Length: 257
Image (cartoon, rainbow, N blue to C red; front, side, top):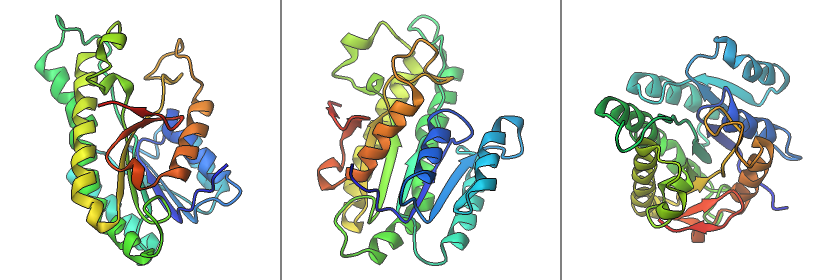
């Protein structure tokens, strides 16, 4: 298995599901990152207890308050992370936080649900990447001799197969219109970021974690959260220039836009 070279990594949406499991597996690596930043909206809420328990056992884990749709909250989180990094920059940013409107059919979808989902799934990752960009750029400069990847600087947007326009016919038995459209937009954002940030040494990739047994994926999903995240960690470990501006799944397979 490839080794994850990142010295520092930040993951959004970490109080449950994929985010919590990703933080857990990162901390349990043979050579874990020196600094793992796990963000959630309210670290003091009951649903964040497992994350706080992890932090009590791992000195390299920092739990950070972050509401992904609130510019003031994002700015405050950047300040916390920057102080902890002490000038070294942030190697990896994983935009994992996301929501789904489960009843979003072509007949039932409305503007309120669509805008709510877009705000979290598209605007949030845009604002977060924009805010943390200086720290990603600093990490790339600090690791100038490293090839493109997590050992240098990487921006990973957690997307989905359901956002693939080309493969919509085979997955349309699950409509979730606002979710699909938001993730298709996130894919475009990733592509734009890959063009805009490549000269700074930042690899930008969209990642499909699979259909996972989480609150969002449902109990009937085919993939356990543990298996999904083991794949995600392997993908992160092998990110390179060839992954810039594409959508890959948890097994490293390319998915067409």
